[in-house]
Image (cartoon, rainbow, N blue to C red):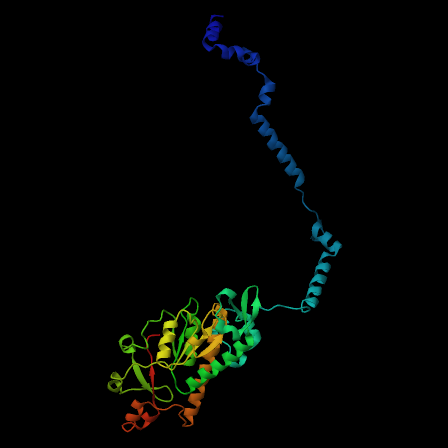
Length: 362
């Protein structure tokens, strides 16, 4: 009793308010079997035994019936395989029926294999979004003759006018290339470099897809004085031995400039006008068509439209180069030899059919 009294004094109210069963059980010498069986460990053991019994009852072996399982036998009885074969046969018969939309437009196709001038159609221009202009508030009144109408506040360019002006530009490019002229393709907007380079390769000209250096034409002897100039014959084969004659000659200028974005290259167009160099340019509804010699009214903001126009003009230059070489094989030179070629023709007989060409940095 002395021990109990000291414990009550030491623990105070906490022992006094505790359940009577807890401290009486602690003082008892008998074991409470019911409380032990209801402990968490025993309940977890009972749960695992029940789960094992359920798993043993659900896992059953499917009996074999004539070398086939019961599930396979049920599928055969339900004619599922026959229905699946019938469905496949139905699909085979009905798939060719109806309309099918094929992916006609491939972005790399216009660069690797551009259309020819004979392939210009209104459908091609419409698919390339060449008819979309700018807002009516941004238009240039001089372009009123190229505008078909207004749709949702945007000017619509007449595709008939675009096709006719593009065909005229193709004839100009083909004529310059056939007479051995130097054609410069310019496109300085992002994404125009590939189509500009491809067009220059086909037409046998030069290309520019970076910023135009002011004075490249008006002050060419200072900016392009280090570019190499060479003399070639009517078959574009280089003729050596005229380095001294070419050293004192002025820098060659392009015979035709094709510009894909005239708004950003107005300085170049101004220099071409000062030197009487004809130009071809894509003119949108917000541009001034008097900046170029041969305008092509179209959407200059659409990369697909620019690729179509550049590819068509490159193909036209390729046809002009091919025609010039074919005529040269029959002894017909389609261009007039320069003063340099005429002066040295007495020294070398074959020089009378030579022409000059420049291969500067491209």
